[in-house]
Every structure is written in C-alpha cells, then in structure tokens.
Length: 303
Image (cartoon, rainbow, N blue to C red):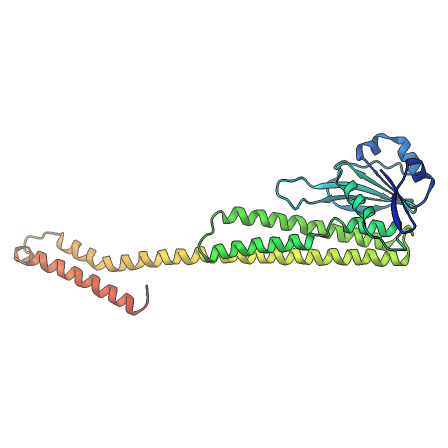
C-alpha cells in the first residue's frame, strides 16, 4: 500500500507516484522487502530486516532503521511486530501481520493538522500503538487490587499463579516503554538532520510520554510486591494462630499428662490405689485443671 502526505492529508496513491513524489509512505511485507532487491534499489536502502525481537532504532548515514515489538494486551494473543525505514523524503514500513496497515488507514481517515508533514505522521504512527495504554495499566492496577482484597478476605486461591502472571505482564511493558523512550531520544538527537526543530520537540515529547508510562509500570510493580508482602504476612498470621492453639492445648494437657504418668507407675505402696474414691478424685482434679487453665488463658487474652 502506498500513501503520500500532501496538502495536510494522507492520500492513497499508486506505486509510481509514490516513487516520483516526496513525503511518501509505503507499507509492504517484511518478507517481500527482503526478497525484492528492486524495491530496495528504488528506495536507496540495501539493508535487509532481520527477525524482530524487541524495539530499537539505528541511525545510518542515509536512513534510520527501527524494529518494534508491541506486546499484546490480550492474554494468549501474539505481539505485533513491524520494522520501519525513515529517510528524509519517505517512510517504508515492513509489516507481516496486517495490523500496521490498519493503523495507517486510521491515521489517513482521521482529522489532520493543516500543516501536516511526513515527520508528524511518524510521531502519530508510533503514538497510535500506546493510545490506550493508560487504560490498560489502570486495568492491571484494578486486577492487583482485587487480588489484595481476596487476600485480606481469606480467598487467596491460586494467588501465586495470578500474581506471577501480572508481574510478568508488568515487567514486559516496563521494558517495552524503556525501549520506546530510547527510540524517542535517538530520533530527537537527529544525527542525520532529517527533522526540523519542531520535529525534534515532538520526539522529545514522545520520549517523555514513554518515561511517564515506564514510571507508571514501575509503580504497579511496587504495588504488586506490596500485595505479595501482605499475602506472606497473612500466611504468617495464620501460622501463628495455629501455633497459638497448639501451644494452649499442649499447656492444658501437660499437667494431665503428668498425673497420668504419675499414677501409671503402679508402685506397690501407692495409697491412692486402695482408696475407694481415687478415680473420681483424679477425674475431678483433671477437670479443675482444664477449667483453671482455660480461665487463665481467657483472662490474659491468649485466645
């Protein structure tokens, strides 16, 4: 697909017109770019794009080359990947997923500025992939808050699994935003002079936005760690309660064990053996010891 930025609009155009005019935007498949020397010759870029693993941008003499891996916000869906070549007059976007074409179509269909330029398109295009990220981060915060409420209410089923998933997502997006910030700083550096002073300002603004999003994800990471600490505290409290009960039971039965052991020796000259009411007396003494122990523990607020 070929577009051209003209008179403040992004208009679809033919391939020949794209190569004849400035301010062109081309969206082709990554595999087609790598297998088509003619396409690279027309653009003046002989570089081939490798497999995309993360977000980065490289500044060369006549062009800038960047790769982008946009994490999916839906569990189980694959990430969006694309590469981009930026020259002084054209932008070539390599996309095998089809999602980039939709992003370009949306920008072309939307309202644009009167003095819209190719460099402004690059900014808007990159920004389109983070438009709803604040809402996504708010959703992650709500998910962590729900887990925290479950922990405090004693309903922490599958806590480790749920929290591990959220921490992995947060870490993934944190690294993503840091990579985008580096890209914004690299473009604002304008080493090959492609951008005007106003363009440099908007790319600095892009880098600042990425830094703020990275800070938000860092706060979420800290919040998740706090909830994990709360969970560990709740486990320790429950363990302490169990140990308290076991300690009280052991303390109550310790004197009863002593009595049972004492009178279980069956020495020949134990006077209580011949006493008619020895058995009821021992029972009464045991009940009295248990009652006295319970009363003492209750008074001292041990339970």
